[in-house]
Each structure stands twice: as structure tokens, then as C-alpha cells.
Length: 247
Image (cartoon, rainbow, N blue to C red; front, top):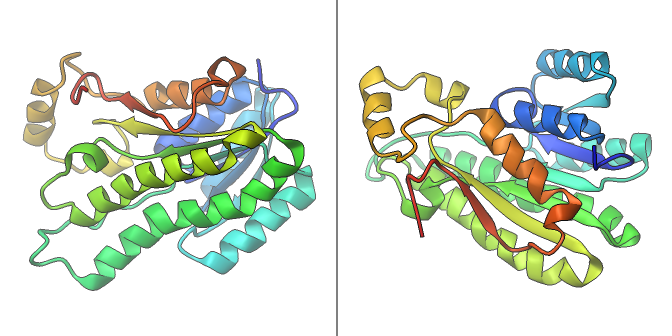
């Protein structure tokens, strides 16, 4: 319980890793601003957090829309007075071999996964600068570090997040604001649930720990980077991949 009095905004909070991050931060005492496209799923999460004694509110948001980002962040600050913690988690895939990939699928993935993180950070950072305290976590991916066939758009967006993380860390470090990234490996989420059983079994063979990760594994890493215990860590990419990629 080290985040009492802190306000955390999580994008893509309605399911998967974002959902797990929101619950973990609420357990640590933070007040949660939950952002995603599904109002219904957000309300269910609000009820779950409040039933456990926490505090949360839903802010329906499509991070692909700059105007919605600006209005939603303004609404969060109006309601809660500030934003201390930002988790840029929202992401999509539009997989295709690069020779067949449509420009629209490239643009939508880069816009949702990378540009939105820049826009959300821009909206949250004024609040952090005023209070001289902040935590920004960007959820990248192992495929932003090693690439993946059929995911040129996704890999590029996630690699871009790593560069964005380091640039922001250098810009705002003197104001006691840290910016880090978490790079999940193969995690069991809605995004991976549609993969074939053969693909999953082959993937597990590449993981030294011998299992697929859970959203909670990633959420625990995010919670650590937002804690006071990680106050001297910034510009770092924390791998949560079971050893699938080392070094």
C-alpha cells in the first residue's frame, strides 16, 4: 500500500494487461482513472475496485482520437485534481506480411500504439511537473526488441515506444519524474487467445521458464516501477518474458 493519495490513469484498462495493472495499482492504494473504449467493461472494473475498498472512475476513450485524449485527460484532472501515474498500455495488432500490408493497417497500429502514448504523456506531464513527482510506464513488447514476421507495424510501434521512453526520461528526470517501459513476452491475453495451439506450444519451447506469462506478471512489474522502491530507475526497459529474450 505505497500509492495512497496518488492518481493513476491506465489506458486499455478494460481487459488483459491494462485490467491487471489497474487492479494492482488499486491494491497499492492509488485512485484509478480507467480509460478504454468499452464503457460497459470499464464500469464492471470500477465496481470491482470499489467492492474491494478502492476508488476508481471510468473515462471512455479511443486513444486513436487526439480530441478524445485531450478531453478525457481534462476530465480526469477536473475530477481528481491531478495525474501522478500514467500507464500507456492501449494497443492493437493488424498483422500481415510487409509486402501485403495496407497503409491503413500500418497507420492505425502506429497511431494507436505509439502516437497515443506521446499524446497521453503530453496531456499528463503538466500535472506531474507542477507537483515535481510522476511515473510514466509504457507497455512495449518483446517484438519491439527482436522483431516478428508479419508484424512490421506492431514491432515498429513497440520499438518506437522504447525510444520515446528514453527521450522522455531524459527530458523530465530533473523534475523527479521517471519514465520506464515494460516489455512483455508471450502473455495469455485476448490478443493471444486466437493463436493456434501449435503456435502456443512452439512458443513455450522458446521460454526457459517453460510457461506462458499472465497479465498479473506484467502488472507486478508495472507496480514496482511506480513505487518509491524504483525511484532511481528511469529510461529502463524491464523485460517480463520468462527468459525468451535475454541481454
